[in-house]
Amino acid sequence: MAASKRKRGGEGPADKKGKKGKFVVNKGEAQVETEQASRNEVLVPAPVSMGKWTNKERVLIFSSRGINFRTRHLMQDLRTMMPHSKADTKMDRKDKLFVVNEVCEIKNCNKCLFFEAKKKQDLYMWISSCPHGPSAKFLVQNIHTLAELKMTGNCLKGSRPLLSFDPKFDKEPQYALLKELFTQTFSTPRYHPKSQPFVDHVYTFSIADNRIWFRNYQIIEEDASLVEIGPRFVLNLIKIFQGSFGGPTLYENPNFRSPNLHRRELRLAAAAKVREKQMVKELQKIKRKEAKEDVDEDVTADVFVTPNEEKPVHIQTEPPAPKVVKKNKHKAFKRQRMQRGRR
Image (cartoon, rainbow, N blue to C red):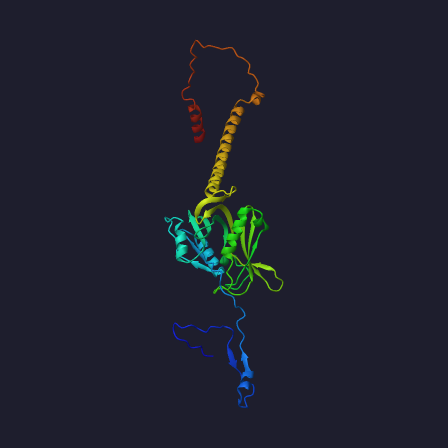
């Protein structure tokens, strides 16, 4: 059917109830009366979903400079999973975090996921409600991306997820605040233009070992079982701030240990092991020296030694008598041999 023509700048059709189409039941007979034609008219049904996109949540996902490949792939996976997200260029390290609020305002976003890299090995994640707050800072650990996991699960791109939270989120106030932040950030708004009207996967947020574990599962239609899709990561809470990327501290995790302190303790433990080995070697050397001295002073060494008889000391006062030397001692024998030879 041809599109309805209207002038540029003019208003479109006022009602969106449904389009009318004429279908002739009997082709052989000509239409005589208008009443018969009106009877044969069939209304095309209106769209099933008449909802409007009212929840205009938009999430800005970007990072600072200095991130590694694993963080970059994680960001790309989150953008794929969240159709209501937006991307931006990396932020310079010299800029302060308050600049992120201005970037969100320019991008028309009211939520932000900011990944901050330090020392090219530590990754911190900020989740904030811009521009008034609150915001939370996490240390991201045990990152596994979609390409790395190679899970058997799969889901429709752009479909809306279910959010599953651990019962501990309702028992403590700091976790209740984080639950509200996660709900507003990770849930896809209803009737979003880029979303699909299906629910086929679940985001789970579970608490264990004072950390928040994130998992993504597919819902299988046959038996409603779960198969992991990925990505997966662990969030270690550091602080919760009243404002966006700053402000008064609402909560500070007493169990958090900075990665710098953890690495320092590992280095000190390795140095202590080396010092212990050196002390063991020195003790072994000292023991060996003491063992050699004991062998030299062995008491049983002279068990089989017999005492010699004491002889009187003789002092020679006169020179010894000279020995008589016989001249031509062997010549007689030589003459005899010569005579025998002549005979």
